[in-house]
Length: 292
Image (cartoon, rainbow, N blue to C red; front, top):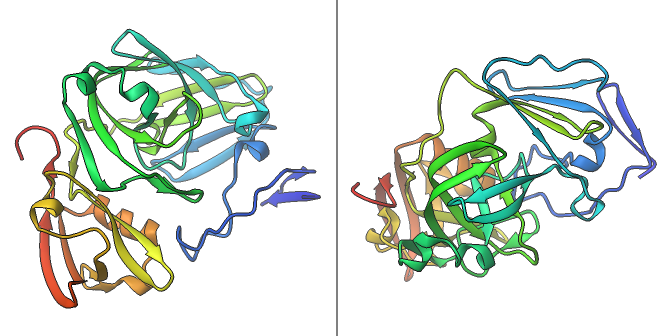
């Protein structure tokens, strides 16, 4: 594109991909990526919901609990920050920072199958698929708790990792991890700064309804169900058409809206069509691993 302007910030000759964002939400007109951000030092404050662009020559304020992580950038991955990660102290991988991904960490199946929890059978497979995004859905989904995930020096125990379809061996570090920090990405100097928020929302108990939705033409359907979850126990099936969620018609909801409802509520009331019958069910969140 000749140029992209955000407020008074302008980038000339900026590459852009054309994708269908209608499923994400009617109020989303585009995704601002690292091909635009790479010219700036960008601070994302999840608590105040602010994004700050600043000159990379200005010093970044360092607090006692600030973690500084060097990163790499590659044209192949759209200049997204890439940092070093370790799983269970033995498996090394490159992690791409993806502020838009809704999970803590997405991991290629080629790496997941090497993890001790997977080898021991402590893994949950979905009926259908639980993962996907603006570029499509995955064919299969698995989730497990890794004993330890080291993200650039920040260690998480019992880290929930969800499989992702990938042609490479890179992990994706998503919003569920990043939102626990005030993050500054200094693109010109290739440094990532993580300052822990006062409110700790990083939970490893992995409570979930165990259900994922997708938009197919003018219908909302059940895309995936975690085995053993509340949705699975409720006998909902893949392909069932969802009419309303918590009394809100799904025709008025985007996939992003439905994900937010699932994330911010402990109870999910579904009206759906299954086997040509209209049914109602109330789901309560439960832990995917361990006791509910």
